[in-house]
Image 1 (cartoon, rainbow, N blue to C red):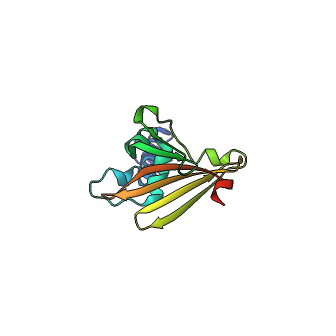
Image 2 (cartoon, rainbow, N blue to C red):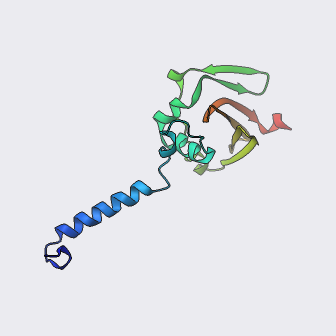
Length: 147
């Protein structure tokens, strides 16, 4: 009759499995959900979560070749897609002496700054184009050069 009164646990397990799957599907932590819909204007926070958690997604959101500047005006290099190392800024601040700061520079521009224990900062500049966020450039500066 009713599977809830039965001594057989299998029907209850199936219902529980479906419930858990449904809850995971509705989870707000699914960062790629908003990126798969054409015409969606991306929220920076959702984008940045996905950018740091998914290496394949990260490669699709970097404006290659990406400009990397060190000590403004001194060295400028271009990083090609084939030379890009996977970047997880969420993991790196957990290392001793590192902090991460997100700053909105304009309606379509964010700067994520990582301060390292060595006394240097790395700025990652992101810009929104056609409703999608892109890493545009990386600027590495020692704290002494910023003063």
